[in-house]
Image (cartoon, rainbow, N blue to C red; front, top):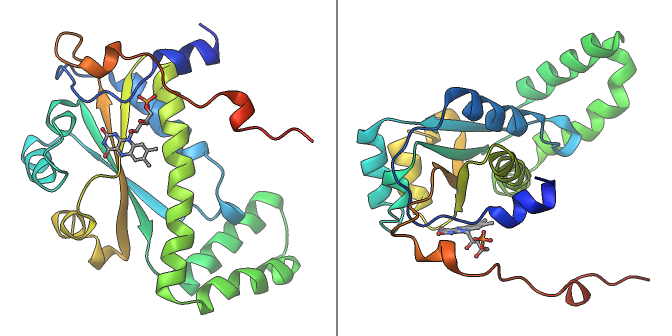
Length: 208
Ligand SMILES: Cc1cc2nc3c(=O)[nH]c(=O)nc-3n(C[C@H](O)[C@H](O)[C@H](O)COP(=O)(O)O)c2cc1C
């Protein structure tokens, strides 16, 4: 199948059948997340990969009781950094220097740009880091389609409750989105049978 055929095949499954996704496919989806581009390359987020039934039960109750949370094979929780810290920036600059065989001082200009993030407020930092998680979410969605695995992005949940369940505040993190990964329930998910609904290309693309 071509990429476009895979993207037509995929849909946001509302009901999944509980079948486990092979680990190799999960790893490929996670690797796509790891390879997603981020602003400045900072990767200021974590992704929790959840299989624990006990945790899924708790999350389900805080995710508008969306059944795909219970019926999935794995649930991803995308959590963004709340406050960008000086230590993280310094560690990142060191890794850039090592990677490119540079003296740290060669990155002084870059450093002063990144310092702007450290000096900014937690609220602004979190908006900035949250945006990066959506790109990773997009990558994961496409990777899942290529792996012929169903994946549903989920924003319908209570982030405060999620932060408590995963103790995110103490990790300087805040939950942004979820993604259930699994296999569609072909008997019970009516959404599978709706035709793809998208705007026409001419209503989106302004070619000038
Ligand atoms: C950021 C984001 C949040 C979403 N949240 C939910 C959600 O909470 N529950 C759900 O069933 N689908 C959710 N969706 C899926 C969309 O409803 C779905 O992608 C859209 O209707 C297009 O349908 P399709 O993905 O089946 O092609 C979300 C999608 C995105 C990108």
